Image (tube, rainbow, N blue to C red; front, side, top):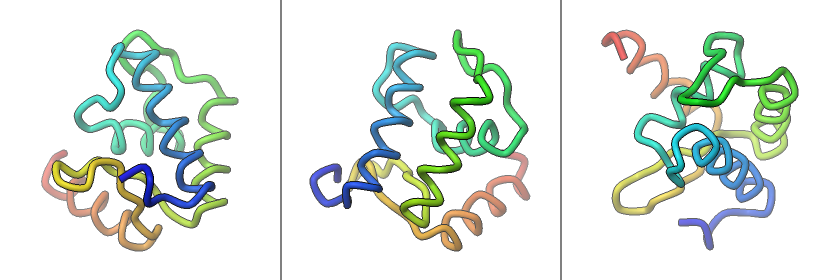
Amino acid sequence: MLDELTPAQRELADCMSELSEAAYCAGWMLGLEYALWDAAHGGLVEYGRLRMSPQSTARLRALSDACGGWIVFDETTEETWLPLREWEARYAERAAHGG
């Protein structure tokens, strides 16, 4: 939940939500965390009606580095911080299953 995030984690969550709003007019689009991770690491260039700029992707990487993880959306806990190692394992598992 947002109120349980540290300031650095909250800044990343807010940035991700702003990009979701710009792309789809949705506070947190389904799969946002995966799409933005792809964008931040050179994969995705367009997301919805948003063209990811080098500045946006650099900001995502910097915010992730600053908090040592990534934000995911959970149906129960909503915006939730995961340590980088845990997030990378989740991302790899999804990619291995064609996600």
